[in-house]
Structure formats: C-alpha cells, structure tokens
Length: 233
Image (cartoon, rainbow, N blue to C red; front, side):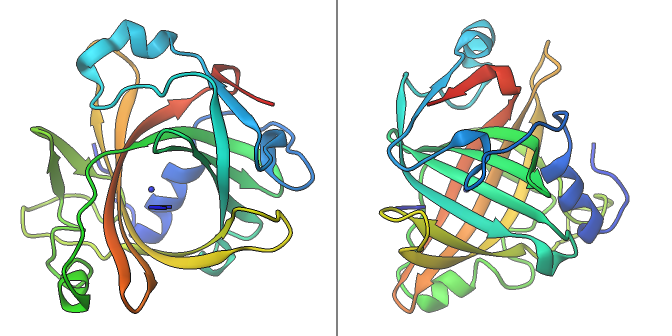
C-alpha cells in the first residue's frame, strides 16, 4: 500500500493550520473518528465533483468504498498536543484524512493517488528529501497544473526551499488495537485555486520510507469535505 496565497508564518505554524482549519468540531467515536472501522464502508457525495467536473485533477471514487486499512499519525511531537491524523485507506487507491484535536473532528479531506514515483535505490530516495530537492520547492507541477506550497515560509523567490514535514504513521489492516506496520513520511502540502469556486485542490507529496529497500514517492490530489459530504457505516 502507498499507504498521502502562502502566508508569512513559519513552517511550524503553517502546516498545523492547514491540517486543522475548515470544519467545525464534531464528536468522534471511541477508537477511530466518525465511527470508522476496518471493513466499514464510505459513501461520498459526488455532487461537487459533478458540478466542477474536469476542473479537479482527480475523479471522485465510485460509491461505496470499503475501508481496507486505517493509518494513524500522532502530532504531539510536532507541538500539537492531543492532535492526530487518521487516514481511511479505501478500495480505489484513495483515502479520507480526518484531523482531530482531543477527539473532535476539525477537518476532513478526500485524497486520490496520482502517479507514484519509484526511486531505484536508497540514494535516489534520499535525493527527494535533501535540501533543494523537488519536494519542498515553492511550486510543484503535476499533470500540467501548478500548485503553490502551503507549508514553510512565504514564497519570495523561486529558489526558496522548505524542508518536508516528517510524520510517523502506524497502519492497521487486521486488528484495530495493534498496528501491522509503520512507515516514515517526508511530506509537503501544495494547493491551487479552482476557478469559479470557493473550493481549492490540494496536493500532498510524500517520500514514504517503509524499510531499507521499501520506499516510494506518492502524489495524492484532494479537497476538503464537509461532514455531510460523506457517510461512514
């Protein structure tokens, strides 16, 4: 499994704001938010995607989608006490990301994977996370669309690079009480406006390290969902 206008604030503030802004708080279930469970189903309201059509760089997955795995990322070590990202990995190469603080849902996003880049060796992988690499540049181009970086200092020049944010993810596939494996994500968030809409399209690029010889560069396109845009059963 691959399993995931700029402000002038620092990276430590900027990336947290983009993860936890958007929806008003809502109560979560005891184990996973919104009652999500392994083997459960997700139904997404396709109306916004039908209205905006090809303006998005991705298509909404067909309904319903099964939850095949669940990932958890604790953000305590990043100074966001009580905050967590929960990712519901779906059948059709997509995931729902739920941002919570102290058990309350703060933001929900749908992501659909685009092409994956497979480095040939560890050195090629490291080239993606070192200073000046493509991952962390002020702009990122994908499928002839240009996305502006959201994490890091404000963009004041083409050469201004920002280091990716490092997350540790635990993935549950069989038992919700015990993770099956873990991986390290070197992530950067990008965004572009959707013409004629208040919505934006986000792009999360992650250099995923699952072990000495297991790594890839994932590119996932998505957008924010309202709580009433999806149903989890």
